[in-house]
Amino acid sequence: MSLRWRLALGLGLITALVIGFVGVGAYLAVADRLENSVDESLQERAAEVVKAYEDNREHEPRPAPGGNATQVSSDDYPDFSRPASCPPAGAMQPAAGAQVIDTTGTVTACIEGGVDLPVNKSDIRLASARDGDSQIRTESVHDRRYRVLTVSRSDGSALQIARGLGEVDDVLDSMKMWLIGIGIAGVGAAVILGWFLARRTVRPVERLRVTAERIAATQDLAVEVPVGGPTEIASLGRSFTTMVDALGTSRREQQRLVSDASHELRTPLTSLRTNAELLGRADRLTPEQQAAVVEGIGLEVDELTNLVTELVELATDRSDDNEPLEWVDLGVLARDVVQRAERRSGRTVTLVTNEPATVNVRPQMLTRAISNLVDNALKYSAVPAPVEVVVTGARLEVRDEGPGISEADQPRVFDRFYRSDTARTEPGSGLGLAIVKQAVERHGGTVWARNRTDRDDPPGATVGFELP
Image 1 (cartoon, rainbow, N blue to C red):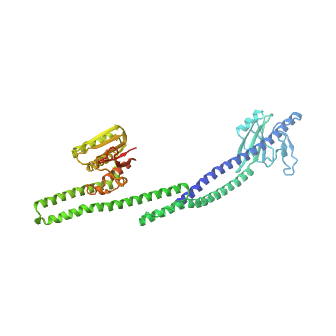
Image 2: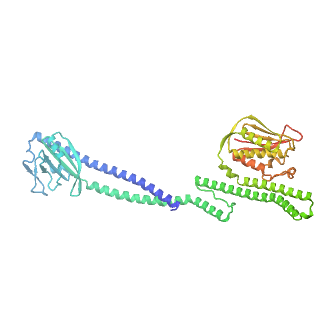
């Protein structure tokens, strides 16, 4: 099911629940109010006739219940004799039935043709109570509902009056049909309105979907991404735009990496080819020339090995993100790198720790970055000039005594394959500082490269980073 229909049917379901709760509540409230109205009319009528009956008993003695009867002056029932214990027929209107119950449970009808009301034990107990108590309940007689009121009288009898609930049922049935009709109409209107509303809401999402499919089909990341709709949809569009821009940047960097790598690989490969051709004519070379060619091939192979290793590390460095973060002392990491550099190069590399601090980093990734900084300083410092590593809190810098970095080159020394004019003859791939920058930025830090201010000739350089 589409999102549009899900939203429309969801709104319809909510509307149905609301109308259902309101309708049921209204139906029950009206039913209770109508039933209370019937009860009030019965109680008022019963109170009047019982009071009149008690007053008459005080001034004019009446026969016992079920005793002598008086002739009813009615053209409808000329043969019906009303017992003296019954109130006048007109006084009980609009009762559908009335009868008197004595303490033995004997029933005396008071309305000819009226409903025969069922009598239970509680009605007989009321007849014996003589205290004026009453009770009311609903009874079904011949599939019709009646409200039956039983009132105790002081002469040891009870008067029962019943009123039909047909009118109440008719009103409730009519109300039920109206509520069902209104509910169906309301749910239908909610579904239709929800469909149009969902169509308007989903339209920006559909445009994003079409754009995503177009990008997938054409691989064109320069396609304009539509941004519009409600706040959340517009935010989704902006996030999608950010993602496409990031993919475009990644692709451009990838293409640049491939282009730069192919350019850097061309020189050692050409040299290797030349030396291989020379070896093909080894019979024309002197032993000294052959040794020089073999040595050149070895150097070029080492250069290619280092270049390929750094290319792979730079291109797949994101896999290092799987290395867990650890709290480590930056000075301890630097000390390990300094000790290895001294053993490997035989040069003097010193470590100065001013403010010990722990940082939350990936140790292997950061160790590689520090090692690249030290190797870079050793490469550009004349033997036996020392290299100094200074750690101040979360800040690390490597100082050398080399020729320094020109102001024009300082902003670009961390770019991939970048080499200044004075460094083009030096060995290396031009990727060491790029790896440093990538590792530091993965940890949210910053890098810098500038000349030292405490030296004049040679000026020397200081290259380093600072972590959060």
